[in-house]
Amino acid sequence: MQYEVKIIEPTDLWYLQNNINKDTNKYYHPTKNIPFVQQVEIKLENSGVVIQKGALHRCLGKLTHGVYKTDNRLKDVWVALMTEIDYNAPVYKGSGNVYLEPRAKGQFLHYTDIEISDQEQWEFDDGIFQFCSDNVILGTKKLKFRQMSGSADGRWRIAIKALAGQTAKVVTGTNTPARIIEIHRGETVIADYDLVKGFTNGIQEDYRKLGHFGKGGGEGFVWIYEGQGKLLISETDGMGLG
Image 1 (tube, rainbow, N blue to C red):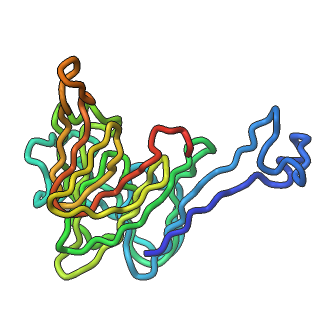
Image 2 (image 1 turned 90 degrees about the horizontal axis):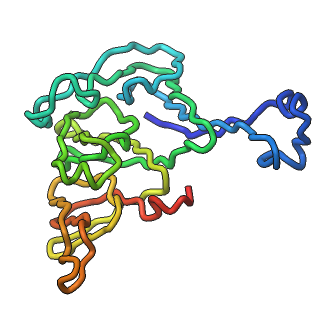
């Protein structure tokens, strides 16, 4: 499974019809919005891909369509069957191209691909997971109430790991650039915003008060990550930098 993120620009005819000189105002015009579009193209060669429900725009090739049902091995027993994240995700297999729904300018994502072995399990915030190879086990996890209150990423997390003896590829999408860091026992990550978008097994996450206001100071509620494993972090989240 390979993928490419494309930026599709307006045609020459669009610039002409809107009286815009493409040579001088290709990307910006003071009074008109220039409608660039971002679209992901996934290329399959005798392989498969699992995508977000509702994410398909079109596909072309010798492909078959199926449905991945959430695997009980990684599923939180308290997640109701009716939840949107309980996953029943579309699966496309074969050889050809799968195109995801285009995103208008202002809603572009930064994509990060992650190699996952059968020895590690990742959990991703709701909406961060975009697509993955089909050699995976998918499940769902429910957030604690105070975790939900401190995050804008929904009530659920997706849990994912590769099939035994295999390596899978997962692609995530974030509003700002993301990268993977690794922490070891005795190290702690503390953030006063939704810094972490995903983490592996071996990491303990908590959302709790750090200190007390009026009694020696404090930061109020913060995200705390401890243990040993990997974190997917987005350091400029919430800064409006894109």
